[in-house]
Image (cartoon, rainbow, N blue to C red; front, side, top):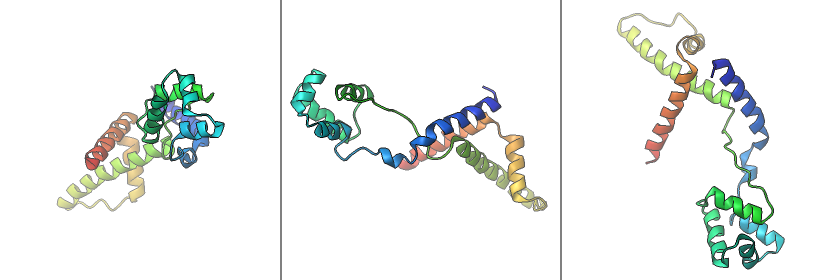
Length: 165
């Protein structure tokens, strides 16, 4: 995909996902949506079990797994259908996709420029003649490709995983 096409794709996705923000509005109830909706309908576990073709104990297990966020999507979808609901599934970025790419590019540029500045100082060749922001923008424009942004997002994600472990 061309760079301009990726940028347009990000912008389209940002526009499509914007109505889902803030995501806090979609936090599940403490006992999960299945239980909340079943209770709102005045439906017993046995009645929902009949609609799902399972035992009431399985409904209890299903509700607990949803509350613990360990439920499988296909199971949640079957429960939604049994409750005459539609399962909506989306990944909503914490910020705009375009802003994420730009921020990552700036981080990469700052890191690269810091290495160059360090080397230049060691050689007594200071680089302070250019505005730092202009240097960052030039580095992003001249050295970073869309591919490197994606690769470094993966690198950043892997670092986060290692920190959690």
